[in-house]
Length: 573
Image (tube, rainbow, N blue to C red; front, side):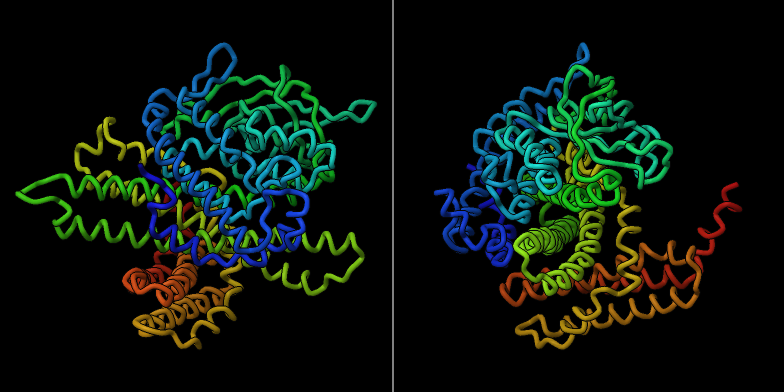
């Protein structure tokens, strides 16, 4: 009986080496929660054991039920009929099973029926679910909208929406995108207005809304008449009712089990979330931390599934009198896939823990403020962690989504012609992976989001500290390679900055971000290799490959090719 948590040795390694002590202590109010809920942990070890047991349940459901239904879900897909959206039969069964296991409120407070788990553990559940059926993650992962309501809504609003999301009675949706406002959310036009009694209403159209048929919607709308930028936008929550018309669902390349809807709001009653004018500049920005990490975990889950399927096929398929697993070029592809997955997992959970501590420090500061206690030290630390989160979140989303596409493509290649056929899973993994570097911000926008912190070299002190550390065992020689990559980065950064050309800096951003990513992930893998000798091979392969790639990045920045891009208008006209 497969279990997608316990049978994943690398995920077991990551889980066993998580350091969530501070995060758990804040989340559990120094374990005061146990006085009010008999199922709350009484100490840190108890909490970790709780997380392990729940992830084992997620792994069991994913491996034995969700994965078994995934092909039929992909084939049947969500259906639009007579103005209504119907899930595929397997999707409906999956959601019912997940709700019965009390998994629809993983990171939400116990008072509303949630599990009050750290974000990092929730991300692990997303990865596991995504390995089984990537389309299901698009519904399971939307419990994040309840997190936004919990953070910024009133007590009444929390009671209105969160319990039914935690119970699984309601699913959610983030209604942000519009026909003329995709990545540029400042261009949102959907109108929010009040009647004489102060009741808010929504009027307009949203497009490409994942699970737009959900019962609880978080909507970005223009609340300030006459404005045209992000300062005129507010966040609203509303129930799906007869005033919201699903005009269509999209006929997509992949993730067929997740309906992507076009919605028309016809004077829909709504509730303001938080303060007016902060919809984009505060609430969407906060939501994006979780949404982008969710997609990164989804991408990793797809990559793991694609790798497992390719490995299985390579061992079973014989050509020229031997299993193709033993053909060196195939073996090399599989090794590269495995190394990329383990490197990506190290990055994902390092980033998830940064988001976790950011959120928990915000909670701690809020409580200290309410109690009239000093919080200056926590505030200073929060600012630093915020910068790190602002960098690691888009970095993880960029690297993992791009990597998932390559791994899924290679998995199909290993299958050969059979992989191109619908009877095999490989082609589904490739179709499902393709969206991950598009939605919640394209890969290009992730580069833009990460590049400012790279230009400012925000991890400089961290890298200084790592370079001075005396590493044990077989990993010590690898430090010199990372030092060389850092010298390449510094040289490229100096070259770019001294040009004093913002356009050139924008064009060089991708290579600079990748250089910085090699360093950060490289040191994460060194830390892992110190704890487990099996990780030395992964660290060695990743770092040597990264050094070769770093030299290519440097050549791209300095060899003059970018001049063509800077003058593209002359070339393309």
